[in-house]
Image 1 (cartoon, rainbow, N blue to C red):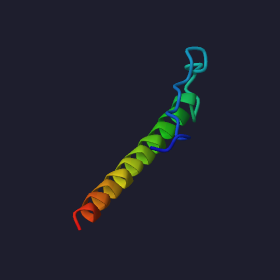
Image 2 (tube, rainbow, N blue to C red; image 1 turned 60 degrees about the vertical axis):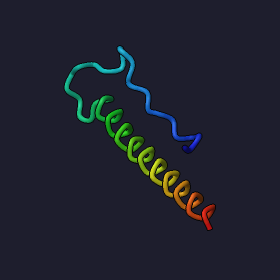
Image 3 (tube, helix red, strand yellow; image 1 turned 90 degrees about the horizontal axis):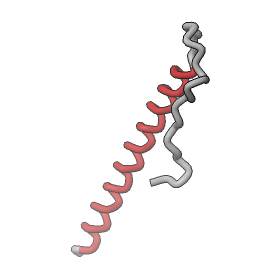
Length: 60
């Protein structure tokens, strides 16, 4: 996995005013989390593909 891909931190208790702001700090957090999850999924797939390739190369 990529070392610099840190999981987003949710907003603190006092960061949302609950005033219905658009975008809200929670909107930013959820978008960052979505992007982070996609990155993690891609990194996992890449690592799996590399593992499968190296296992295939070792058999020949």
